[in-house]
Image 1 (spheres, rainbow, N blue to C red):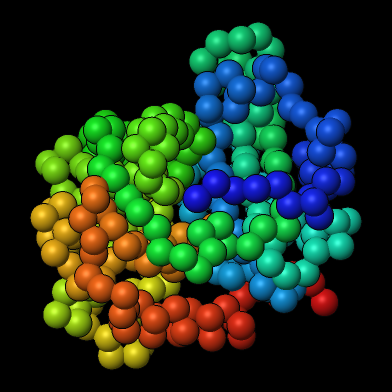
Image 2 (image 1 turned 90 degrees about the horizontal axis):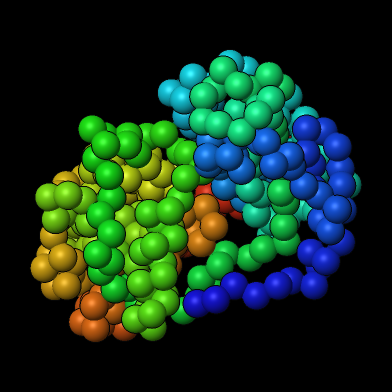
Amino acid sequence: MLQKANPRNRDLLININGDLIHRDQAGISPFDSAVQGGDAVWEGLRLYDGRIFRLEQHLDRLRHSALALAFAEIPQHEEIIDEIRRTLEANGMRDDVHIRLTLTRGVKITSGMDPRLNTAGPTLIVLAEHKAPVYGSQPIRLMTSSIRRFPPDCMDPKIHHNNLIQSILAKIEANAAGADDALMLDRQGFVAETNATHVFLVRDGVVVTSHCHACPEGVTRSTVLELCRNHGIPHEVADFTQAELYRADEAFCTGTMGELVAVAEVDGRPIGGTDRPVLERLQGLFRKLTAVSGYPILS
């Protein structure tokens, strides 16, 4: 699975602190905290027919992450929503759009990691692209990475920060192995997530996903658990191992960029069969939900 350029994105306008700039001219200062040390937080949003799914939940997570990193200034939700709306309108976007929202600590007076060097900020970047769910409809293959996810005593995964080196290193291993993505474990050897998504398995009709001890509190993950609760689908949140994943009846991954996608293989082992009744039901419920709910950002 390799994303390809969409010709509709050739002349995108990027929003940087309220300025709409052509993608070829857009840029931030080399003194910006995101460049200096990955000192920023981010969210991925998806637009469905003029509505952003779970926008408030994403913006709450952005604020919580910025608070945890002691940002001196954090824009209010309304201000961010206005800039998202301006960006979508300027690009003529309404549906099948993914939005990468980034908030950095801001610009420093000189290079260095000390936040006291930040005298201007924050920097808000709204990058909206025409982008369908990246995995498409085909099941994906995973391989287990040697890179472990940090627990809270190393780097709290509840901070949705821009330092993604762990994920990038794991993705490099997956690419080298010919897999679509990397399965990542926590320090105890339990499944945490992939380099980009949360992991679910189905055994004996029960949907299971891991605790958030070593992975973010995913918005799509929480939506799937909510769908299970609302529609009487047995489910639980529990630690599970690779062996349990290998012998699962079904497995799938969730995320804003890719929605819900089946996992066909992990470490060369086929997972279940070609029939995935539980996932197919959840995919249908998810499509129905996104078709009618979300923040109406466009008229």
